[in-house]
Length: 163
Image 1 (cartoon, rainbow, N blue to C red):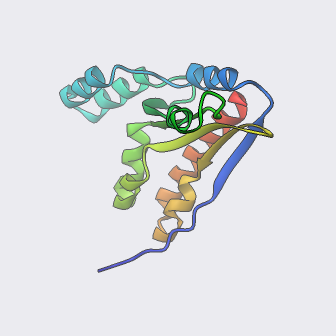
Image 2 (image 1 turned 90 degrees about the vertical axis):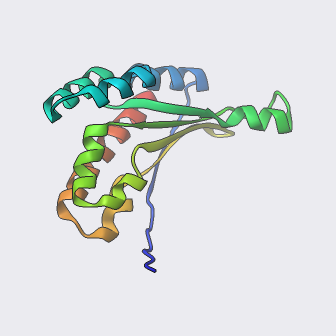
């Protein structure tokens, strides 16, 4: 049995924009493919070049796409009533970037795609992300770390722009 300690760095930005404005800005920058069709297209790709083209067509200007979202605020509203703060968890990524990291560090597949949390707090709308480079640092792969840092930059630009 092996255990690896992973120390995670969280990147956060606080926005004075409304929750809806922040979510709309994020949605505009990421792709929203029909996941069933996307999966079928990926399985049908004959080459890696074809797969890359399919992924490029599914991502937004940020080079990221939405895999799923969870409305955490809905649960809070059920528990605490209509005044409960809004909270959404977006699962976003890029299968090509994921494959580049996994090629060097198989455990990177545990961390990709990534989570973006957007939630209302008394001081504003928080956009938070756990840095991929911090997840991969313990594996000591310079190649995977470089790819993770590039991904972190993409996500952090996305959050800063949406804020």
